[in-house]
Length: 74
Image (cartoon, rainbow, N blue to C red; front, side, top):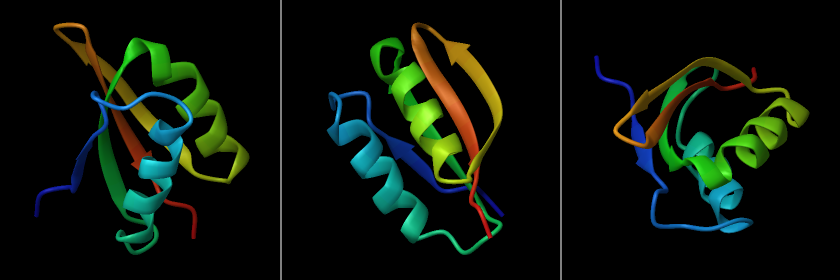
């Protein structure tokens, strides 16, 4: 089973977190959502996810784009 992927590389704050939040609504807990984003949005998206109880379980980088694996809070 593949994890859902959300690409927000073309978005800017605050829409980045709004789109991640909407993406998480489509994932049943404790599902995982993979998010592609630019470095500018990285810190704000991670802190907003943690504030809402979600866990960022992995952060990787490929060619200037970051990939977050987010485990949805139950």
